[in-house]
Image (cartoon, rainbow, N blue to C red; front, side, top):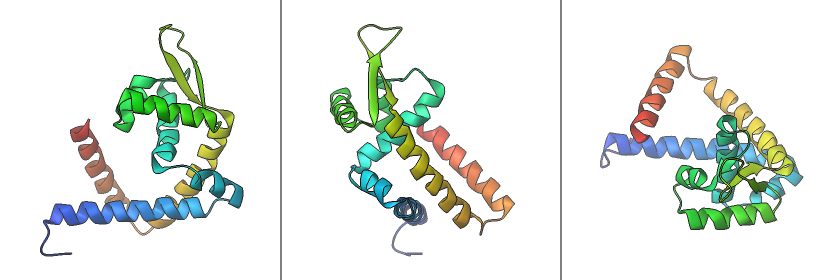
Length: 154
């Protein structure tokens, strides 16, 4: 570790670098057509696909724009532009909100779901391969640390 930087800074930097490598390897391991789809997206757009999928697990009818904006740490107007571009690319659908006529619900389209499934299947394979070096106890400690950090960031 770099002695001139505080240990938490080094650890978080190394963890970020490791996770980014796993993410990149998972994208490069998908087929060429899927790579072209993924590589044609900005990091923000790719992140939005994952966030919409995760939020749809709680809200199957779709995600409110304000909720997605908060999850992406973006303003509502910027998120609206992002959603518009993703609808245009065919990855998102925008439907009326059944409980609020002034709002819309954002969902992954079939194309968005297919991309998510393929990329995240590869991502999960990469995680499985790289986490195999950890013992069950190390995984429990990592899970505990992750949960503690998520709680603090919530």
